[in-house]
Length: 149
Image (cartoon, rainbow, N blue to C red; front, side, top):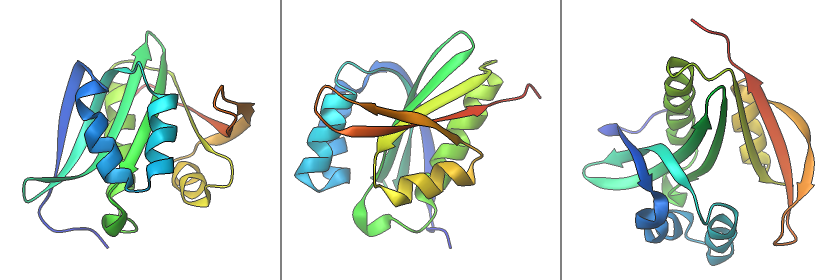
């Protein structure tokens, strides 16, 4: 099922600093927002916003360096989850990275977050290991190899 009147809008080469408050609002749980701020504190890159009736309900950011892309954060308003918003944003992100000639995409999500695990697995990402962040949180690293179209 999908949300009606959902628009995906791109942004790029700006700092996500202007979206810090938005990320916290979308995450709604303070611990999740704090975790995202720590993980992506100096993020500069590109992204998409999911907007429904001029209200932002999701955000997906990424950065890229020649042939490598890194996705994150991906955040959806709690009451809009399980409606395909994250899947739609991830599809736009992967398509944009492929169009830019990116050959490999990586991301990470907190260990135990089964929703993120299912989302990435559904897009062909495979787990490549775990890492402990400087915040003491264990992250699951995932990767997908993109083929040129």
